[in-house]
Length: 141
Image (tube, rainbow, N blue to C red; front, side):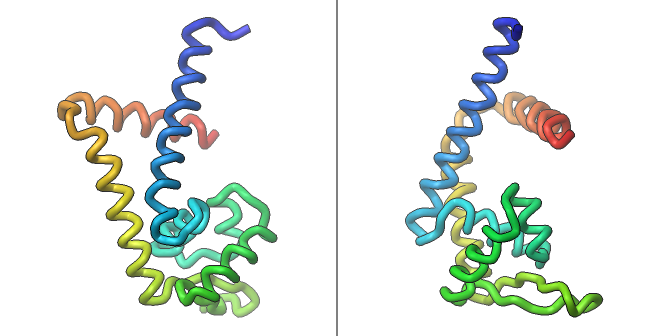
């Protein structure tokens, strides 16, 4: 059985996820994006991922990726291109419109997040950064 401190830790981690996920939703929706579409655009901005890579990054099935890409492609935000080394593989790339919308989303999310942490001291921010990096590494397994 988990101790009280373990219960509190788990509850706090779940609460942190819920709050950041809510903030993610609140900033993506006004831009006409679902949170998962916003995540996909952010990953695509830097990686030009394959469908399989996107499925891994978004923790979902490859069949979900097809629908996500279809909807974003229909809006002119992404395009599919064959991989330069393996023409059997398709990679997702942002269009200029997708790049612009991704930057708008990132700016809105970053502004919302930093405004909520504005009163934190530099030491508190540094402590949070260290703990979140450590937790992320541990959770990756």
